[in-house]
Image (cartoon, rainbow over all chains, first blue to last red; front, side, top):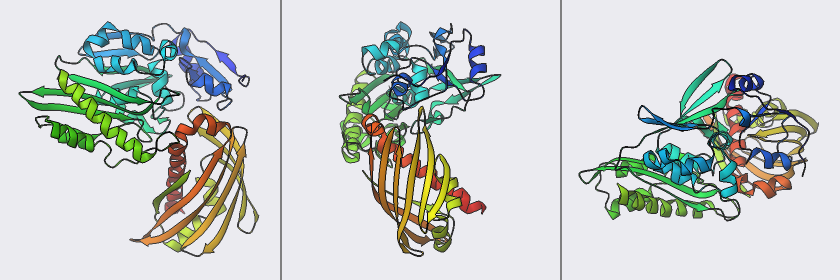
Length: 284
Length: 146
């Protein structure tokens, strides 16, 4: 279908884009993998679209001062294939490699995906496990927000009208960190029915750091804190793994749809948490 | 799709019951409500502009209240229709006093159809819960301030 008429702006600088977006009435366009289909179906009908695709300098992956900075317009493919991320933050690269299909990964961007905040998107699980931060910019200022505070509800983020996500900051991992992202992909959309990202560090046989990010299960992605607590300080035996995986959905109201009931989703979350933990332990 | 859950309102059941049927409180609490008019005893017409992320749709709907048992329960029948889809729902709200406040329990069946259901099936459940949460949060504010 053809979208409703809209005004199209293609600014060449970030400042110009932020001015155009300042009053909150225009919609920013990144890779367009969510917004364009919604507009074609006329589920979205913004009067004005500000295309961020012609602004130079928003697509990069660079390591500095122990962190890796990723520009908002970096595509999923650039993230999955980035030598810096593969070496220093393999969890994010591995997660990007499992998003949608190749066409989507070639065009879709990390900033667009996060700002859209689909509750079944893949990145949030990894970014929560990584305790990432996001830099949000608006005309005349910017702020940095912890990823856990960024997702506020289904399709809802900490972004204020007129604000855009401009950069994602993840830690450059110490060697010996074990990571894994395991998902059940929805057969039609490729979205995560459930996706679990795990990040573990071990010292002298004991788990010193455990982070579990969960996507797809609830209205917003979250960290499975009860599971993390069960793991930290443990020797990560098979029994510990099972106990932690069993706690991954504690206190969570699970989503339900025609494909997966809440009960089945919760079960999947436990099974895939155990798989992700075992895979991460192999590397830790 | 079956929906159920519970929220607490900071008011006694008598007041909570009245608030939940007060056109002004309803108009202020329904997400995206543009207009709510009483058309008959216990019947209302409503216009909504629902915005969830990039998705946006205008809906025109009818709300009917039935089986009233002041202040313990009533039945709510809602119908809405717009370019992007339609919805029909019916549910019972049960009010019970809890420590000076009122627990409002809802239990009902909602059908969503049209474009929005075809494309968004995966997200209907989470979105419905989100809209209900927003409704009760606003209602709670309203109950505190009035």
